[in-house]
Image 1 (cartoon, rainbow, N blue to C red):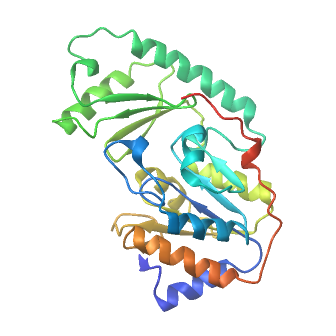
Image 2 (cartoon, helix red, strand yellow; image 1 turned 90 degrees about the horizontal axis):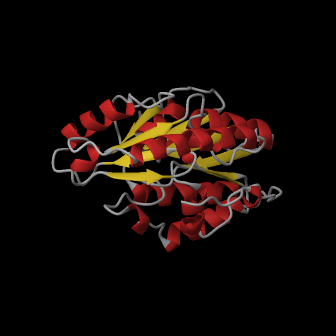
Image 3 (cartoon, rainbow, N blue to C red; image 1 turned 90 degrees about the vertical axis):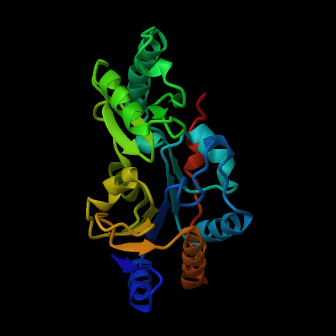
Length: 272
């Protein structure tokens, strides 16, 4: 992995920006710090201003594991695309499939909520089940024994019908309906919908590796936090570097404007 803010890497970044580029970002751990209580996460005023300026120059997409309803207030600007639930919510033209995912997750939630097993996940302090309508997430960051919590959750989830696609995160187990798109598939769909010929994607988590591993020649992948086994081409040291990168992107695009037609407004908010 190469440092994204080195001179050689910035030359590659500039090349990616030629033509009609899409710039895509994860939220948690990328644009906002990961915090113990997810609802307290926020994007800094400085980064928000930079992103707003960036969105005035080229199409910007936010692809997050959060529900659209939760992500939108965090942003403070209008991206051209706002994709939630790892790709299961918000892709233009994908509404029928998203409704099917919602039904599956609703059935899982009803089954998990009815569980009375005294030795199951409900009996372990520090585990929280989050209903995001189009996916479910088990958070176990506060569990005293996270490895045991993960084992108990995996065993319980394996009994759900249909069996979920499990996406591991930072002490979180994401449950997606079978055939639900991941972040890489979402980005591919957005490229086709937008007419953009190139893209840059910045993320930090296991779920972002779904983009990195696709190795799409038209997509430049950047990971926040260097990790030897990551499939990303470049890395940023921390979130302060994210701000520096976005500033650079604005400067590189300065003077070049694209139509700022927003598709995020067409996505209906969903209940948490």
